[in-house]
Amino acid sequence: MNIKKIFKNNYIPIVFATDDNFIPYLYVAIKSLIEKSNITNNYDIVILYSKINDYNISRLSQLSKENVSIRFFDMSEYMDKYKDLWYTHWNYTDAMYYRFFISELFTDYDKVLYLDGDVIFNCDVVELYNIELGENYIAAVQDISQQMQDYVGEKYRENVLNIKRENYFNTGVLLFNINALKNINFFDKCIQVLDRLKTPLFPDQDVLNKVCDGHVKYLPYNYNLLWNCIHYYQDAKERMSAEIYNNYITSWEEPKIIHYAGAYKPWKQPWLEYSGLFWQYARQTPFYEEIIYKNCRSSISRNTIKNVVRQREIYLNYLKCKVMKIFTFGKTREHYIEKKDRLKARVKDYRKTLSGNL
Image (cartoon, rainbow, N blue to C red; front, side):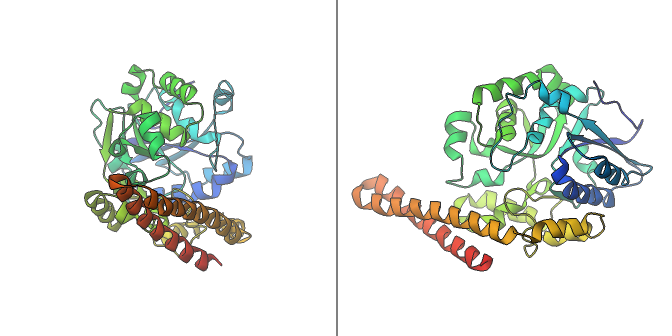
């Protein structure tokens, strides 16, 4: 089934994927999108979902107006056909795989903008949608976290995916070239790669990177400003090149789309920079009290436990490097000394975080 155009002119097709638990945060994202919209443009918003209750659908639909259409498309039937393939872990859900179907569902469109629900818009999305793709399959932003040395999954990216650090992109903000994707049977390629990888580390993201590698138009960081990097990784500056870090900081000063990716969220860490933008819009939604209630019950305890576990992992690696520098020589010894110093700084950062949580 194809999703048909609802506007004739000046339309921007926008796709979100969600489940019932994420509806409050998606509402905030769409609220900010509409606040930054222009009356001369038409915003064709389609929400891909499964198992959303009617009350939440009704509340989200209230955001519709003359130039903003909000539609819902149930993915259950499509997902069931491949249910044995959908691998999830950590906090991921099956909803992340909905974007594999975009070239199949939106064949009436030339381009489609996909956005994660944990974003806040600081610009009119039309400027992102109007970017020329040429022959590229997608437009995306380089994943800033992957630009750090010793980032989780670095060896997996290099040895299994065989993708260069600088080519790996984040999938939270994507502009799809529908015609180009249809020509390569994009959906089939995604399924084939997922079937081959079986248990990818960053499931949908690893698959999309593998399928699109070499056919990506890279956008400035401020179109998908990964908020977690500067807050979560206190040693980010030391772990990436000066050029990349400076470009990231420049984008930080003028963000267009803030993406609250990763473990840190503005509804969990409201004291961090740019959390205020989320709450500015959250206060204008019918979910405001619900968001507060959900996140004040036990978030401090959960975050403390996660930080304790992570600090222990880093500390054990630090001890390993400390021992190896004694029993190795030459360049190998230099490697362990350098790594030990980096890990020591990270241990200190986690101790500060823990003292703040406790």
